[in-house]
Image (cartoon, rainbow, N blue to C red; front, side, top):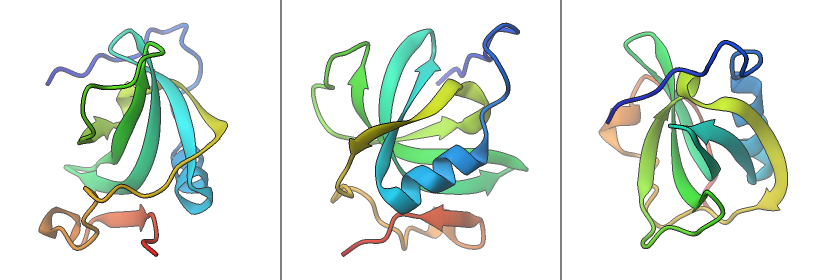
Length: 113
């Protein structure tokens, strides 16, 4: 998967604080990703190779829901115009907080009821 860098005029770099708040409040975020508008339900923020990544389900891409639910990995730096939305989400059954890929690198994950 190729991750496109935001254009210089896309505003400030995305803040991990937005993702932390979204995870705690179970609120979706909206962003520009690969030139398309996405609405994401962030489930985990973690580091890999000294970069921040977010595992999230995509709820909408360019205003349309995906064909099937899946957990995607997004490099935080690739999410331009990142902002919190009022839309709330329920944690996905696809999210496995005990996944070994999060061991020793997880910063915050959504709490499972």
